[in-house]
View 1 (cartoon, one colour):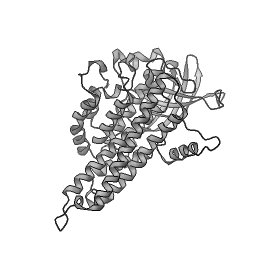
View 2 (tube, helix red, strand yellow):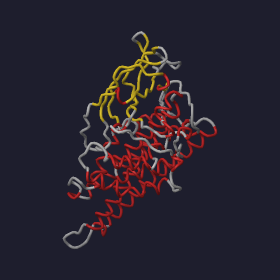
View 3 (cartoon, helix red, strand yellow):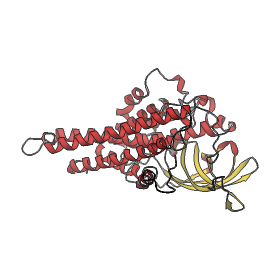
View 4 (spheres, rainbow, N blue to C red):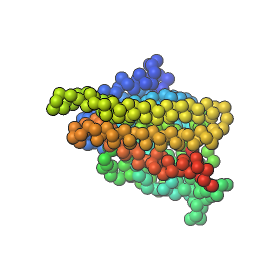
Length: 396
């Protein structure tokens, strides 16, 4: 596979991130329609996003990234997800890989992942389903992973590894297993080619195996004792902050597309008497409530991460904002699912047919909602904290 690397962000034209991505939107939308059943994005869409600097948005400035503010990250991921949920999801997966690599990996990894200020793309899955054993100045690693979003064009693959010694997990000071994140070269990874799904088809989220190898410690990040080596406030918000921003922004953008397609259907689909759905009071009620819910979810997400960013810049993020970070993300999906289901039902058999953009957005929202970060258990965990249940806690 050809190497895909973004140019340094500083070389971009002087325009807002949102303007840059919005201009690409119709082409992304057309590619999504033309490749409805493909399990990878059109390579031209990947190139466009790369050339726009999207994939390096979260990476530190020291390595050529943008180290963008949460509001810009939400703008870009939401806009991409509006035009194609798979493009938004793919982008945020690769963005997050760049953030972790650039902020936390050792100096020896930088020339490989960010050669000459370019970003060679890191993607994959950080769930700790692999194992690692210390060996010299590195770790002997191996593992199998699911949902490697953004992996089709990545040169390095993320894996989560439980550190072991003598066949047993190594525990940290809090009595929890030590979890490492390792970034392995693509040539040491075997892809299973099994991405056949209902939604987010274009993300190429294949299962993959990281074959046994010794990975130098500079390519490993200890999440139990993180050391931030580069960058500023963006990486001080909390380990789950960037994934929460990314997933929430996807839900916001995909929901906007559902609303616009619903409104277009209501205005144009004629009934036998010549009227349209948009002439009815029930539609007025439903669309008004849907708009209010969508705007409230977006406002909650944006204001929460503005506050978290500001708090991280002046000191520790308080617990109530950490709770808001998880809850705002999950709430965005609760709203997205409710609106998507209502709109899908309202648009009758029109959106039943494959190729309709509302159907695509509906399927993508359903797929995104299955992620552990936003699924029902996340809401339950947040509720336990709000209810002050003994021992209740959220990871953030």
